[in-house]
Length: 501
Image: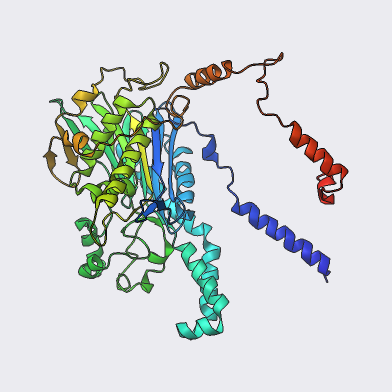
């Protein structure tokens, strides 16, 4: 029989193993090269206070990637997690594996490539649920322990079990929207579940800038989705009145087992003949990329919903596209373009809250925001000399002034609507300072050589020693002296003196 010491050692080993699994581990996607034709901006969720200050309600749950797999293949994605980061973390790491590890080999037709994307979404969800099998089993075991007890009785008799059941249930509620864009041999394919969006900006034959929403908002306000749910024998009116099912407002997502395998537990979903919330993506493509393509935007709903709430606009895609054009003219990197747009929307939303004198105020809080910009044929006039603005597309580029004119919106879910968005700059512009975060040395939106050049210029201003190294510019002599005195005085714990094994 194991001794008490052996039990203690085993317990310590198990705890170390548990902590090891909890720490972020290296993913194979970390080794994929970043696409230099793209940039990402983001902002964490905020809840405002009457004095104008703000605080986060939860950890940042958005995830994204922008990879250049080879010269013919680029892959991008934005994932908006809910009820934690478990699903968005998993999806953002697993999705590239389901697309880029040979699945596209030999696939030539649009139908074949769309099928690869379709299967990838289903495989990611299936793998995610397999990864939480232990949580599902633990939940069922805890429920059996409390079976036959009313809630108040269970809380009084088994408070620890009730709390553990609550914690486990919250973990398996983790889900995520997903919108991905695949560029393969100069064709674009987009797939999505949930309400994260993909918007493609192009130019038509008459020189007008057109805005094409390539994704579908899978929400309870989408008539197509309500029709699908009605075919499952659900009360659509009830869903519209009480749309928030299992901590989300989306009719499709990756993960969130509670509204899938556990949908019978929800009053407004329990009558469904099969799982009502699904991970089946909508897919469009392939769209040929030519000189008429300007840029592609992938965004979480926090971006466009914040702008809608703050301004009341019904053409939020057009407003965002206009902002992007403005920032192309001002910024020096694609990261700068994306981040400047995010910052502008954040400021507009916060200013709307501060201006509102009503009770309750509008715009009291906003969600996490992520914006990914993939450039095709827009110039960055302020970019570093060696910045890469286009690949294999040296066609003449529109100036920022011409880009702002005659913007029209073409939504795949509605008719084409033409409008002039010149109002966006005059009515909603804010004096945002040029982006200082990583601009000038960002290697994700300018070439590596440019980044090295800036770093070398910086180093050139520092004095070097005889070996060509930068001389120390902080004097640690007092610190070293204090440490030596501590050793001599016996103030250093003995375990610090033992050599590490």
